Length: 185
Image (cartoon, one colour):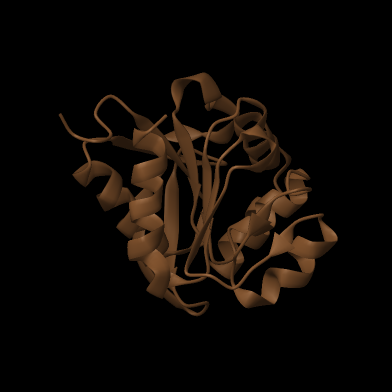
């Protein structure tokens, strides 16, 4: 039996600016572990990925609109980074509400690079320790979280699992931790 057999993981992005590797690498890791990834975005439509903040890359298809995403259907949430992606997500009330719903359901949330911006906006960081792209550390602290500079950080405080990493170079550790945490729930 595969580690994530029977598990469905939501991947939350905006319609544009998601860092390609931070979407595709965890997605492949979830599939490789026998899980089912599902792409959620404000609209069930095309999503433009980027490599860095200026180079458009591949497009992907979100299959579920945020308004239609039911937390009960998922075992965890992954929030990829990308500066534009994360900044856009944190201004989308439905995306912020979805993040809050995962936390309220005590389901694991994983965010990489600039992805924690939506966690800041959701107000779910008091008492949590996490990492992110270094430029977010003041935002994390102002939101009540404790920022650490680690390749990956898994925080169990407040009754829910938060998995965070800093940047694309950290993806192997990020992916392994997502699989381990979700498989052991």
